[in-house]
Length: 157
Image (cartoon, rainbow, N blue to C red; front, side, top):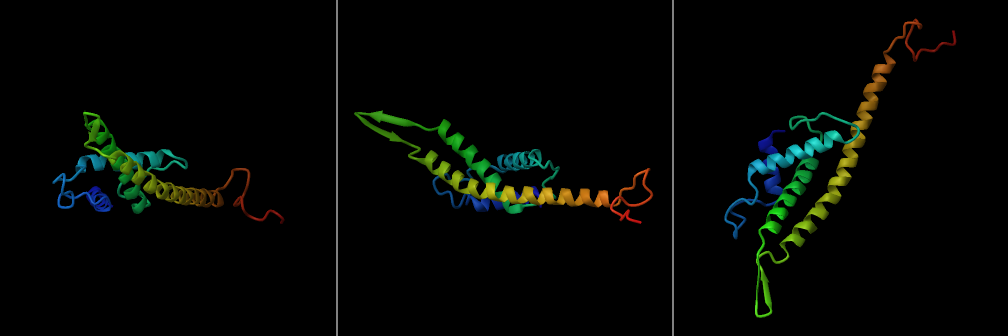
């Protein structure tokens, strides 16, 4: 995987393209912000047990990376729109330029996050099983100074 590949997948998943964003007439979140989201997702994943040291090139789950990064991007967009919203009120009538956009973003975040959590559990379980397998492989070939053979050898002789 490369950053460009994952950034394009995230933009495709979120339908974030200037041609599709008729009201904005531009991409909503720029590539640099999407890369920052990808870095945060990888860092958070690596800091959760079992600890890992994946990078963009060897990350074990592309779909997970795209979905979790998309959540980060939606959060960024939601914060931006919340901060830049305008409510106009006159003669007892209020109009908002962001009519329920925050709620729609929060709903998408909840939907995608449920899948992200499920995928993270599966990937971390896989990481743990790989770690145990590597440790088991190390122990099965380990020799101790007070023992003349493999520690898993049958000592009933």
